[in-house]
Image 1 (cartoon, helix red, strand yellow):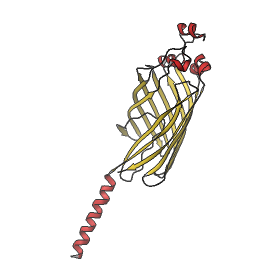
Image 2: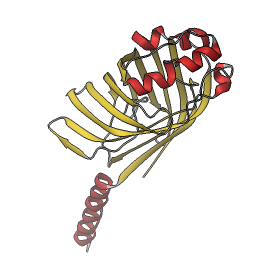
Image 3: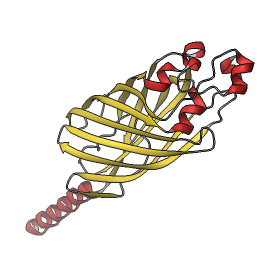
Image 4: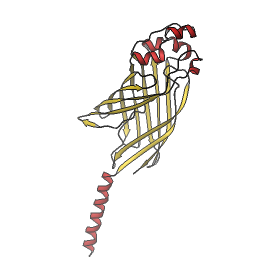
Length: 253
C-alpha cells in the first residue's frame, strides 16, 4: 500500500513539474511616461507606458527594448527573428506652432522588424514602419542593445539608436512650404529624407517580489541633418529629444 502511494505521489509530482514547464507566464507593466509632444518639439506630453511580455514555465522573459514597436515574433531561426511592428506618433496641432504651420494628425505606423541575437548579451534590430494617416511617411530605426540580467530578477539594457525617415515624413514635421513661409515669417525649407536622429536608450527592470516589479526606461535622441537644421525646430522646438517612463509590473500564470 505504501509503495502504491509513493508511486502515485511521484507521478503527481512529475505531472505538476511538467505543467510548470509548459504553463505560460505573463508580465504586464503599466505606468506613465513623458515623450516629446511631436518630433522636434521642446515640450513633453504624458502618455501611458504599457508593456506585455509572455514566456513559458520558468524560462526568463525574452528581452524587449522599451522603445521598440509592438509586435510578436512570427519566425525565428539561428538567432534571427522577424515579425510585424506597430507604432504610433502623436499629432502636432496648429497651437503647437502658434497657429502658423499646418497640423500633422495622429499617425498609426505599420510595418515589420528583423532582429539578430549576435551574442547572449548583444542584440541587433531594425524596424521599418509606414505611417497610415497623419504624417503618411516612412520611418526606419536601427538599434543595438547590450543586455545584462539575472534571469527575471533584474535586467539592464543600453545601446545606440539611429532613426531614418523619407521625404514625406521630414516635410510633415520639419519642412516649410512657400505658403506657410509667407504666413509664418519662417524661411521656406525643403527637408529631404535620410538620417533624422542619433541617440541612445536604456532600460531597467527589477523584480520586487515573485509577482510585483518595477519597469523603467530613458532615451535621448539628437536631431541631425535636414531635421536638425529645420527652421521649425529652431522656432518651436529643440534638437534634443528626451523621453522616459516608469511602471509597476505584475506577473501571473
